[in-house]
Amino acid sequence: MLEEAGMKKRSSKLVGMGILFVLHLLFFTSTVGSQAVDYEKRIDAYTIYGKGVYLYPDGSWEYSGIPGVFDVERNNVGRLEEVSIEDLLPAEVTSIYDGDTLTVSIALPPPGILKEDRIRLLGINTPELKTGGWPEFYAIEAKDFTTSMVKGKAVYLAFESKWRDSFGRLLCYLYLEGELPLNIQLLRKGYARVYRPAKSHFHDQFLGLEAEARKEGIGIWQENRGKPIILYIHNNALEEYVEIANNSEKVTDLSGWRLRDAIGNEIIIPAGAVIPAGETLRIYSGKNGIESPPESFYPTRINIWNNSGDSAMLFDNRGRLVSEYEY
Image (cartoon, rainbow, N blue to C red):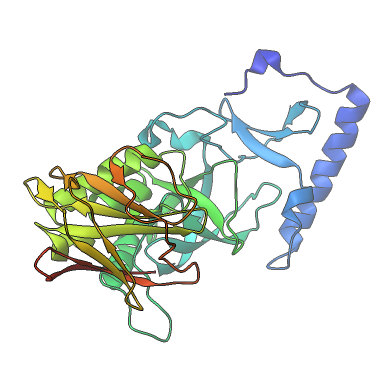
């Protein structure tokens, strides 16, 4: 967290110039509508001690008089539910694309944020609706749940140091009055899984919530109750692995089981690959993987999983298909 005592203010002349520039930015932000904005060149706006402030590259600051961007990393928040909505950026949901993607209207947007902006919930991933194709399992239910939670209600947004993804969407934690954050609720009720390609600030907390939903076999996990499943494939050429979760209530021995990709390449899981109930295990492959990582196995140096997309099937030692995964 930034300490107020440690901050230095500019000279009165520089502050005056800064205020004029801020007013110019606020006017520009309110008039750009949906036009493209160069976010990198704008002044950062953060909430500190419940007040909006502008931070300058030299470390100086000044109060903005409007709600700022509350950064959970900068404010050293331990758990997502510890945040007070009084510190957050208020917004109103105008449309819902799917379970984790929405459009919001913001009355007083800080610089770098539009009056109407699309947001993507941080740290989680709900099933895709797939425009023009069949929706993924539980995608409609996830969207319906999100709609029931946010429709007609005020919402409050918290951020991390990276505001936007590669699609230009704001990356947010979404809060509601008197409710747990929507990110948490989607995980706890089985409408979402943890987003693994990039770890959020609350990644470990989210993994625990996902494990509880898997164990209960609710939502997206209901079809996988009581058996091992392919949870995630990390397909980076520098380090690739398949993460397998044991959804049963007993220890499962994967010795001799096989993983097969879309064109028939196979990995034979070595002896000793045992997963306790409710736990996960990683099967590494490729030339650049980790040497002897904990709770994982490294049976092959051949790269198996395509970066552009692939599918995987998990077979037990009797050749029966147990789980499938596609990315």
